[in-house]
Length: 316
Image (tube, rainbow, N blue to C red; front, side, top):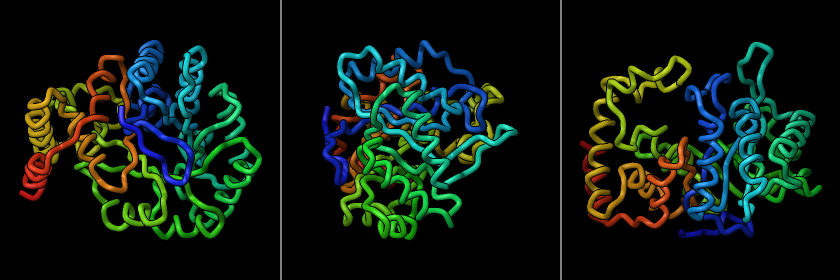
């Protein structure tokens, strides 16, 4: 499996990493519906067995549950993967989520994450969102202090724009950015990716398969049958008329992938990896089989003709 150096760190990470968003299960606002913990554990271990060498999670996923699953999965594994997690999104008393970038809150979060993950140090600690914006400098200064204290090895940001990264950089260097990036969400191509390349900021993109929509396994009927606790029921991407076009795109990706024995999802992931500023992509798997169907993206090189065919569809 291919590896690339992540920004200004000393970590050579596989171009596909394991994401745990869906493993948080139910009980939080962005849930993907119910999730079996045994499936989660098996999926993480399968990804590691196939060569993936980093896991991305966050304290807010399942309000801590995803981190607990990661801790259990890696506890007895022969080779410890790099562990990336995030802070600054916290539950409210009524079960919603709020952004907090205050120093005391971040310090409390890092201790909770270390405990749930069962590790002594976090390899990459990230500010999950830049909200409230007025507190970016305080939050980032606290992250830099945690690095100096040895609680985390490197620090990064997630969902930041260029102006917000410049504010953080005035306090301490940024090792990585985690933005959304897929064929259905290309906003970061407008300056953000080039900024990261220029400043040696690694980029680990999330949702390269558009929350599973580009795997080629969806239909209008499947969307209708999603549980009420799955936020995708309410996403415009999963609703007609956008759904009709997105399903057609997934079919095209499947046709391209079939020529080399790859899935539509692997083509969607490989498309994000083709960008010169992208270090790696975060991909999730709720079962070991799903993991097996997507990790091949790491070694898939799309041809110029493949890319041109995809772009022609997108511009039509």
